[in-house]
Image 1 (cartoon, rainbow, N blue to C red):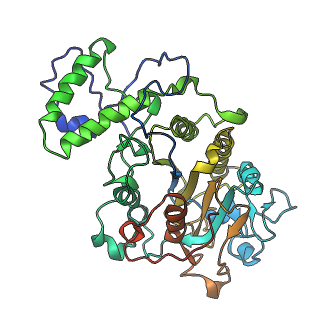
Image 2: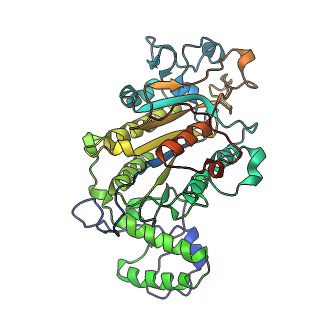
Image 3: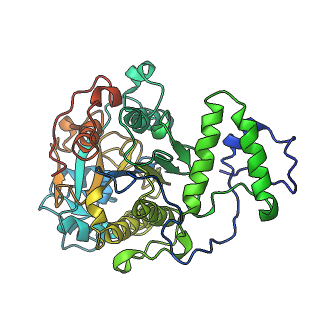
Length: 430
């Protein structure tokens, strides 16, 4: 998304629309930070040390990522009846799956995830999702981020991550509790206290001349201080976020264990997320998006669009895993979940693509994940077992998120986070 430039060349801000200030996310180019190390150059009050609970990182695969490609059920022979051209072939064949458990296998492009999987730090959850009849990207992303099916839409007005933060005291100073590394705040974080959209953590500033930056900031802060909430608090949160991001030298950050992130927007976002987590500035939840999965034509599961996206996802997640698996055992304090709004149809279409479906696969990674397995209640791909032509959903994604929130995030108010839902424990954490 393009953002207007709110640059000003002097300290006269009378022409600035105060409400536009927040909507624009006040982003722009910034001079490189000059600190000699990437660690924070600010200090907090006593008690703002390492969080006693995990940082939760949510990766939203927007566009309907096909879980039956990236985690292929090659042991179900019906897969090849449904997808004679596009299915990942069994292990041992050309461009075949990388075996996981004798039934499921990774697409070749997902090979980087084999290491965290075999280390017991990564699991897949198959035939999962949110049971709702819609196949609309817009609707299903909304319901997934709200944490309810469409039939319950009137019961909530904000996101499940935002509601989680509402139910629990900050684990740190509380200045910046949630970040969406995006141009606009992800819906899942909406309603949360001290949450902020930060498109580029390394350059999160009021754009314009550095010589007048302090004067312009003072004028804007004074203007917002006169506004009632939520305007005044939103402005204060934005300035707090800017200061916290400025306290980390992202430019000189060196990932641990020689981890190399893809040189893409998504790869850079996960690299920045790692730096933020290690800086221990009090951020509790981070969301990062990776779009482009709506592949109705020319899926390209081994060479092509899908393979490219899978390579980017797997490469970045592997780097994130290795980076967090440092001498401080940061990986033991982070849980990462990758999910999409829905999967694709069981059968390929005539354009060598796959249309919108339902059941899908989630990816869960962390030091306290029961990894090295594909958690499932497999419904089968024979025609009588399909849900209107789709992989049936047998595990609600809220089961997985609920278990993480309770076991790793100290949540004691699940009904507030996922109203109307009773969790079934699926054994995703240890």
